[in-house]
Image 1: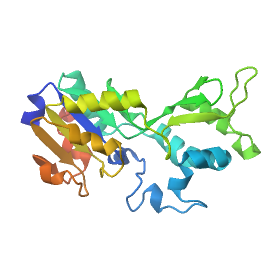
Image 2: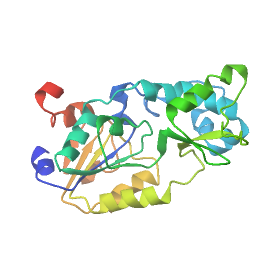
Image 3: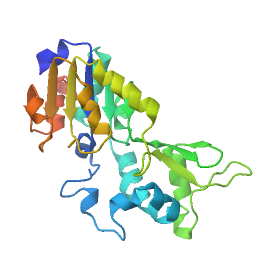
Image 4: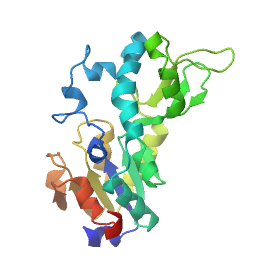
Length: 248
């Protein structure tokens, strides 16, 4: 893999929740993932737009405990750092991620297409005022008193919504097209930490027409048979091999 990646200037990484599990953020479908935990509602229902509209208080309790706080506490792992280094060295042209935690940017990656949004961006559902994650967290401290996170702009007071793509919501068309363009022009595509079952995001890998397809995932994916290189190890171990020894 080193020869293919280091010999190219158009490597694209397509990743999912498995990239961040080594940073302590739970994925969705593993034994300890969000879908295996018990709530009053199934997590996939709580992460839907209709649930947000009907039960914003319960949505935000879930979002704060299971999504926002773990993401803010996490630090980039070897996979995040290696991808940032590969970009800085002129090999990686883009990261396409299904994650919303912002760890790629925290590691130093510059070109990151976040298909499902980011917890670091939040906006008023009425006036569009922007709030970062820390500002939202401060407003969420009032949840215990029964107060929802409302816009603080004078004369507004509407509900704030995280800039994350919920079930029943479409992906941002501009970001989707930019990600598609990156995959379409890649010489090397690395698929990592994703089971490739969430569409339309996962369907982007069908656009790859380059020279080398690399799959790094502990479980099977439907692209395994097409992979030129297939790894079942931890993604941090595989990509971490690109880091200088002292930074691993």
